[in-house]
Length: 588
Image 1 (cartoon, rainbow, N blue to C red):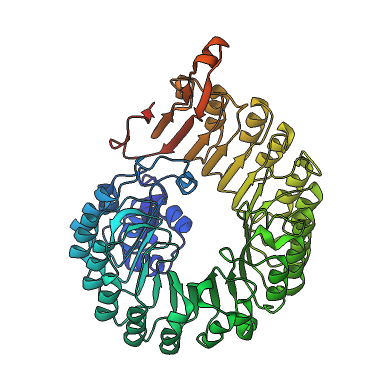
Image 2 (cartoon, helix red, strand yellow):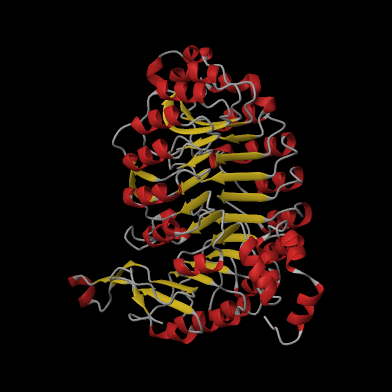
């Protein structure tokens, strides 16, 4: 900000009243950030009119800073633990505590109506404090992959947040003290529209869902924990406006599959996620497949043929999430049928020998089919058994709308058709210029130093990147760092040929970088080489490798590496955090 020249002239040209009117209609966070840097006047009015803020890492700022800058905030999204915590790569007691933030939110923020906490530790006491201060006004509360609280906290929410329209708890670890919370919610709330406790272990009573449907006539989305579909027949009759449903399960103890023919789903249903559905039950959803826009089959028992038969009946799908048992044949059906598909996720299936047949593999053949047939794709995440440069080139040629590309190459195959993937990744990145997020997790030899250089050179708009088993030496890392001018967040895994010195120098070359997490590299025992990457406002944290020295190993002059070293460096205006466990070593 410079008031010496531009600021006064702008103030004379644009009165406060006009700026308030204009800025009140601008919501894009990047536009807002740019506006706030013009001059002090624009910064002040941005602060007064900003309605939503996302803090991508809870240690990047102090809670008091948020209130001093955005006292009239209406919506806040706050992320805690690194994304690696979702894959059990971060210890449970690493940090990410919500208490300091909730204390600040409870003492101010008179306009706050929506709160989204992701991967944070939230206690029942935190919930009580927050609800006591803002519960009467809350319209949306999301505890997304959080832990530390119980159904006692949910009862506080259900009893006091009577204006709540969205309650989201998906994949949170919740201590279950009983299902009374759902009964309280159904009794006290009449405006709820979205309720999600999918992939939790909460046990509930079907009669409470029936009461919820009767009292909340505007309910359009319900995703719940495991609950047999037969117990939900009355609920479906009452929830006539339901558009999204997830979590209903099929119980093999119910006897013949015909028992589920009694289940009639609501007429407006557009999105469906079912649990444990097998070949004998899949016909239950056939009658309304043509109207479905979203289908999640990740937790079903369907084989390749079942996927083919089902997807052929779903021509209007825009979002499809499956396991790799779908196989290349299933992806070919997707490419021929789902021309409106925008989001495709193919997760790794269970290592079940019964599912690991020739059809239940995703390779370059299936990927090429999708690239050619689904031209509106914006997001794709694939666990593949085999891959080729030609498949990546196909995405670069036909998938110009892609904004998020993620590929994991599994180690189930001894030989991969076409490595390294240097030319393929170059063609992909050159053709998909709208990419903002990119993940590429390969096997050793999957990408040479030259290919890693291509990733840096052609990633002009990418802001988030995850790379695993890429490059061959420090030279590749340095080539990569010469590009990626807009890269904000970087995660590196299993690049055991990169040295501390090269990592430090490379990070200094990335001008927009605000966050980097690395696991698996050539680390010293004290992380001393990482100090070279220090710069103003950077926190650097190091988790040393855990080494086990057995008697046999000592005789041979070697040691066994139990855990890989980890590096976390991030931009912070709050200084070093004080709640780190002993195994985390703050370096700067």
